[in-house]
Image 1 (cartoon, rainbow, N blue to C red):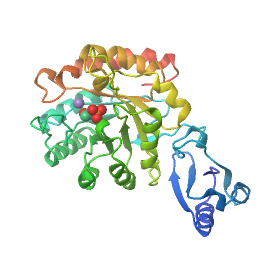
Image 2 (cartoon, rainbow, N blue to C red; image 1 turned 120 degrees about the vertical axis):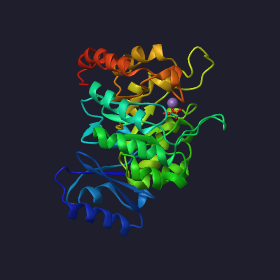
Image 3 (spheres, rainbow, N blue to C red; image 1 turned 90 degrees about the vertical axis):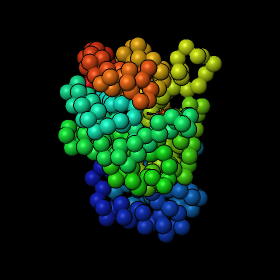
Image 4 (cartoon, rainbow, N blue to C red; image 1 turned 60 degrees about the vertical axis):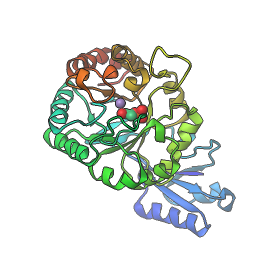
Length: 337
Ligand code: PEP
Ligand code: MN
């Protein structure tokens, strides 16, 4: 069950509703949104009625949710969720573009790419400090030192930083540095990790598992939301199919479909979704045309020497061109970039 509070509901109104839920031996989960607050009830909903909840001061409406993902479901909010990213948001009119290398390689590299992507109009800087590699002998990331290089690049440019957290044991460390925690495709169904990340209350980019259905994807988001963290950004990053022409198959139809199923913002990762540098520009434009709220793109000052994912990484000048090329598409769908 979801209780939507009025936009002018006071803290006392919110506390009162939560107390009434606890009195019925149920668990309230408060989700403080940018525009309004929502309280989800977990447990046997027959213990409390909609009529009773709607009679409480500050309550706009109370409703049962049929979907298996309740807080994430569109039924719980007609209004789109905006997730704070630095002093901007992802999910509003402005399309948020996150750019940076696959992996953090050095402080110099991070600062130079951060300056270039900021100048081109990126909203945040990406870079993996802990890398989930298929081959255990591949570069695993600079780890803590990588986080320090990201922090140095943020200090230099003011760009918020996005970096992946691989395990429960490193959530505390990564959250000390990151502005946005990234959950990679291989961890979408690591439910214990999702719960711990939910507890941090930090914005999270949740990548779709490469073989996950939309229903599974949204239930993974629900794990984070149900810890009281409303700041979840979904990311389509391509799925495994029989096709070998691209690294993964970038499934853009999920963007408008997810817009119907959820109020959470949706971004697209054309880098992992295609694995091919020449496809980043058209697929980024396509993503915006179908309604994506943002993009996460791998950019390197010299992709040929990139320690990770070079073939899908674009140069800083390609990125600058891409940002310009996306403007008319964004305007055509009534967005800004
Ligand atoms: C990444 O963003 O660098 C990454 C490893 O992504 P994914 O989890 O989508 O493969
Ligand atoms: Mn990568």
